[in-house]
Length: 244
Image (cartoon, rainbow, N blue to C red; front, side):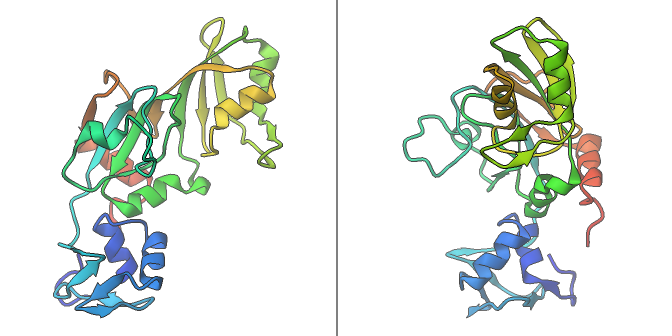
């Protein structure tokens, strides 16, 4: 919320209220879906603490305290809320009264750590590929892991269907068919695509860490709130701790 007597850009205000990222806020403003004191807002508009801001039918109550949840997504559960045919959705399992949004996703066939937050700016910072935030996985494939496989994966693989080459990554064999891998980019189904390019098929995939947040002892379907020093480190590493 803007400090008393101080103005704040409307897109930043919407992000701090947990509505969406600043970029998506600009889209809402451009589409005429945001009102300030009953009037359609304009691009670049600034607001005061005393202003009434409305998005759709919802009147905002000012900046919320940043909340982050760590959730263990089971296999078969989807992240999207837009699929009317999905039987199992994360939001149905958490049932949090606050509006939370995913800071990164996992496909239906994968399991492990998903972070959710009410802070649009935090999501934007975490999802920005240039920031190279680490995500760690344990993966089992359908063939024995060889030194050549590890080296090819580590150096980066050209994905023809996306016309990109994956970044160098950290990878370690931890079993005959199992490896641990740390990525710093967010390509859709990246590990599965990389393995397929090497002639292997993923049998199971579990994310165990996002930046400093670890899955820990959570069991499938369980969640916990990220607090204290753990939250402070996350906000520091994303540049969100002392934002203005």
